[in-house]
Amino acid sequence: MRVLVVNPNTTAGMTAKIGAAAKAASSPGTEIIAVNPAMGPASIEGYYDEAFALPGLLQEIAKGEKAGTDGAVIACFDDTGLDAARALATMPVVGICESALAAAGMIATKISVVTTLSRSIVPIEHLVRKYGFAERASVHASEIPVLALEDPKSEASSVLRAAIAAALKSDGSDAVVLGCAGMADLAKALSSEFGVPVIDGVSAGVRMIEALVGLGLKTSKTGAYSAPLHKTYAGLLSPFAPGKIGA
Image (cartoon, rainbow, N blue to C red; front, side, top):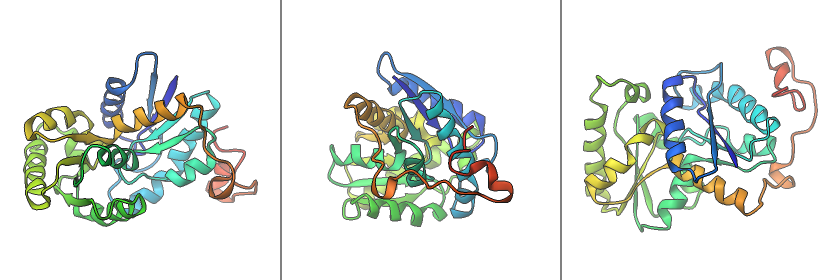
């Protein structure tokens, strides 16, 4: 099985960390292909960054499917471009927010999601409602910029731990979901430290794809996820027209 893991931002160091977490979570015989777009923002922190991450992300999804990958994980907790990727691809595509919440919901009753900056709270709360967890999950910000997670000299780790401790106390929760793919390498240590399940969406996403592929399931091509209609895209977006993207 070949699983594509796409970091929608352009920071190669984060892609390497995400790829390592995905490989550690994968089953024997699963090949992890971790990539990031060549164009787009260095990190995704809000709606504006997300909009400009989409073309490069979708290009990587299209290229991966044409290369024969069996499924894809979008490794940004905003589930950046997830619906568009599902419309584009036939292979199953999952986001790490949806995957992490689904996993947490099977093992805990109340969930604390701890993300990076406050500006991410509202977009994640929208996803929490969309996925049916509004009554079970609360979203908290640690006020750590995404790229600080890549800086070994930063205090990001200690700040994140303090935010998790505060979230657990205020929510009375029995599981934590890490709200950024850049935190993927911390889940195991944090779970041991806090004595509750700490779920990393990258790992959960890989296992979700393995399950879907193992069941022989692909993305439905009727309804909202029907293939995009062929038409001309103008100007700089010409290469992203349906039928051309990923060529």
